[in-house]
Length: 226
Image 1: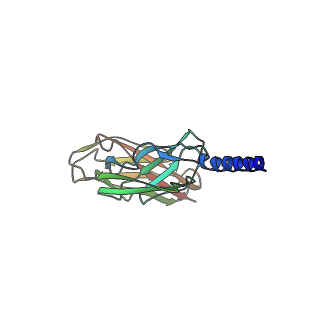
Image 2: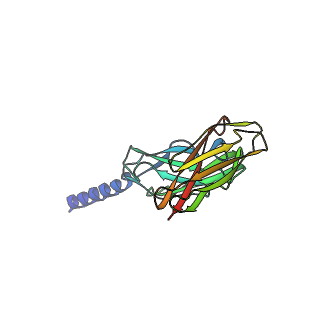
Image 3: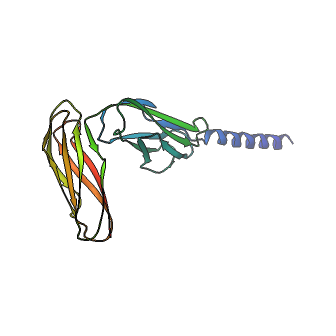
């Protein structure tokens, strides 16, 4: 009888210890509240975070979300084995912000002690360039060119020189004038779209500048043609 009790007790201890030891453990490499510094308003800022599982069971991540102006993505698997790590990336689009801002990234885990994790970052948004509207949208028909113009305003304190304006598609041609935009002044970004096939088309226009805070700007274009 005593032997049976000892065996049952040992089994109970084993099950209990297994339940305690077999637990995932969430750990963010670095602080969970940090500053990403000065961010130009028209250049998306990308940042990567490393998540470690310091526990003894698989760490499961779910319900990843981010506050307005920010997108977050798990580049690796959402199931992280013990002693392994995963990468979380986020992109902060500052075009609608100015000055000091704070943003939040939230994620749920199966770590009993960290079921809901919130990561905060701050940034100082500096307005360098304003483009209005923010993108081109054409509605036209085959072999019927359409032309639109966007305003590019220099909000910084130094003259911005445009070194190149290159579209990704062959069906669109673009020109920015003048090539030098002084502080407080603006230029015209004009695009001419000649559809080749019917349907929807989209792409980017890449603008390279001499401003150290905005060396590369990207303007989207969309077209629906019949």
